[in-house]
Image (tube, rainbow, N blue to C red; front, side, top):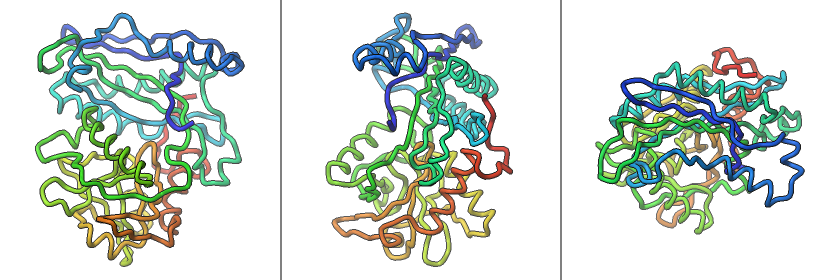
Length: 361
């Protein structure tokens, strides 16, 4: 399934106007999940597609014309005890607030974000639109497990000239999702494209950032790779991140390195969680610049992290035609440990001692 545009029926919408936010929950056309599954493909797609259209919002606006928008991505996960819980939504709320502020929009209050995410998932679950826990997911460390992907995003008011958004909408939609990376190919290549530049918007989860990322990933996949990795804009030698994920290197010395945050790297919630889990285990974690040469010579294991990626191992990294294989081309011991711990907390097979999971239903 991975990502698919088959949104659940209940959508959240808030509008900023007159110095305040007003909010509403919209219930789009639907049948029961069982009835929809029994429909023919064309009829099912018609209903699902109808949930993606709104006839009371402007087509020409600062988002559609100039990409002026930001978004978030977080998950609600079905847990072993039968419950449904969202992973660290407070961190997404804080990042969304900073992203909107960084784009000079009126920022969306964090408490409203939290409540809206919980309620959107809860209302859809009450209609039957939610995944259920399956014990067989444990056999592959939840790599094939289902979850609810929650997508909050901004949409600007109508406008045609280059301008900022002073009266945006905030929308929250949710969709079923499974593994983001699939097919068993975990090879990556360093792209010569530049994702972000100093004094740009790389630290913001801005929609426009993902145009270059999409192009670079498409080129990588056409060349037979799963993922692309970006270098810095100034020196073209320091690793920054993947197309839509942060990146980690577990060195032969036992040090875990991830590129330091700045205005060109997105502060990932999964990234921060992995750093905390690794330090809890006594691992030396460094957030610093790391050059390609050091990566290729000193790395024992490599993995990428993100809401969609979780902690996904990278089998090899190719740079200027030279391929370096990590951990014999399979998930290393440390990578597997971190992946299993993170997934265990999220899906409820391991204790959530940090209270990262926010219950929904």
